[in-house]
Length: 332
Image (tube, one colour):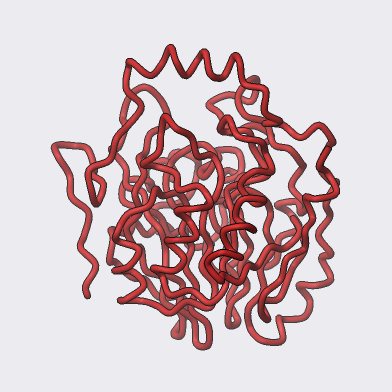
């Protein structure tokens, strides 16, 4: 089944299916909910420090696939001889200013200057927790290709990336890395914008990364929608499906899945292993910081899903089910 391209209404991109947003009438109840919230949204025990063993990158992964979870949606993906960085965010806060806003729970386990050679950087959409100005500015003057959703290129240019190294993709568009890897943008159910103005004027996407031996799905941010089945039918099965499980809430049920819907999306995608992301790094919702992964463990047992959960910063080969249980040592 071919993937349909995105649609717009005027200047604004539309979701694959009707999607609710936070309504003006929700603002006061939301403020009250945040003010009265008793959950452990920020870890009581400081997480980490985590430190990446840089010597790991001197030897390619034996089976061709290795993942380093930097945190949130930032991943260093070594796949079939190529290295891809997704949604790199190294700043302390995901906000329009470093003076306020959600602050990271642990420092990045690897410095930007320590990263191995990169063949591409993928930017899924323009939210601050996925597109970080200071991090992008580090790559000014490099020749690393950037693959991003429609409209996001103008942010990258403003942050110093040369236009010739930016490829914007619509849903269904593909681009090659060398001669043996294809990256395809696929639909997601979310929204975009970096302030009061310009909401939904850039696109949001998920991505299929298909190498010579492995096929993986990077879900970035999305609420649940039937399109996961279409992606699974068209591009699956996937050796690894990387899906968001955190930052869900009752006031925005359509734009973040949570562990229940994420596990259903995994089944739709025809995945072999599920890697949870978008949790344990920033306080973006009202749930306990550890709830997403603890709940996912339960759903995985109920639905016979095999998980891949590496420790932050640890280059981990994808050889089968693996759960580091790294967070359990920080529970109260």
